[in-house]
Each structure stands twice: as structure tokens, then as C-alpha cells.
Length: 238
Image: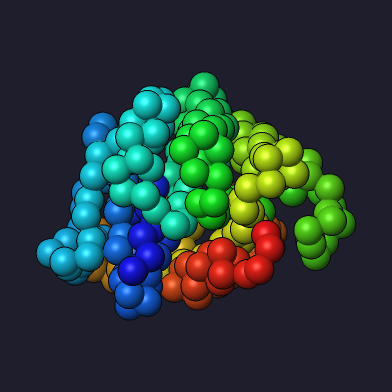
């Protein structure tokens, strides 16, 4: 039986990925920050599954991840945890950069030192392309990050590439564009719109305030995206 560790398991992607891996016969170790305000509602359906275990950890403590790798001996690690709000990253830039860049570096170092055969998936973001006007984007498009969040994601993306090339790790990044589901957080635009529509229907509000209405995005379903993450780690080479 394969074992996978998922950081950020209580998020939209983490919960879908955990469910998907359990159907594939994995043992899944889901990691949640002890200080996280996010509830475990998204993993309630698998909480009592015999092959699922929820553990607490800290993105700021490299020793915790060393212990987790030694204890659970995973075949795969999926790093989905981060402060993921672009707007919030301007308010807490240090926290954003610390959790994304240093959190990724600590995972890479732990894998390199404990077991270099562990395969790593890193969640990168289309926000890395930022102000690049040359759409549509591909893997060769220039990164032009326009927020602390995007800058941190670029750094983490490059760290994964560097460790792959320098230490021959099976480490890869998937550049994720907008992907939605009923589990999407209520502060994101799709949920903001649907909640406002419901509230307007119920007479609880009469207006919806949005930002740039000219923005264009590629949209997908989170359940499809997590299958892509898994498929990336099943290849012969990263």
C-alpha cells in the first residue's frame, strides 16, 4: 500500500485529493496547521476511514516534517498548504512568503535528507504570470508576479526546479489556474457571486461589489485538478 502525505488537507484541493487517493488504495496522512482557523468539515466524510489520519504540523518547524517522513515513510508528498489569498498577501506579506517559500524549502530539505526517492508535488499558481500580457500562457511563458503571493509562488517554483536538477529529486510543480467546487472558500469570486445571489433572493442584501470585471480566467473543477496532481507523480520522470 502506498502512503501519501498531503499538506493543507482541510482545504478544497486537499480534501478532494485525500478522497481520490483513498479510492486508489493509498494510506493518506493529512496535515493541518494547529493554528488554522479552517474547520475540518471538508474531510468529515473520510475522517473515520481506516486509511486516513489527520495530524497537526507547522510550516515554520522543519523538525516536524523530518519526524513525519521518518514516522510514516511516504511514497508521495503533495504540498498544497499556503496563505492563498492574493489580496491578503499585501496585508501579511511576511507570513505569505514564509509559509509558501520557506515551507516548500523545508519540505524539499526533509525529503533530500530523509529519503530522496519520495516524490513531491508542489502547487504552483497562474498568479506567477501576473502582468504578462502574452496570453494564453504555457510552461515557457515569462513570470511577471504582481503580488507578494505570486512572488512567493515563483520562488517556491524555482526551488522545486533547483532541487530537481541539483539533487535529482522527483519533484514537480503543477501550475494551477482557477478551479472551483462546492468546497471553494466563500472569499473567492465564484462563491462570493453565488452567495450574493442567494442573499439578494432572500432580501438580505441588494448589491454585489466586485473588482475588475474585465479579467479573464481559465476555469476548471477541483476534482479534475487533483487527479492531474496524482498523474504527474505517476510518470517515469518529473
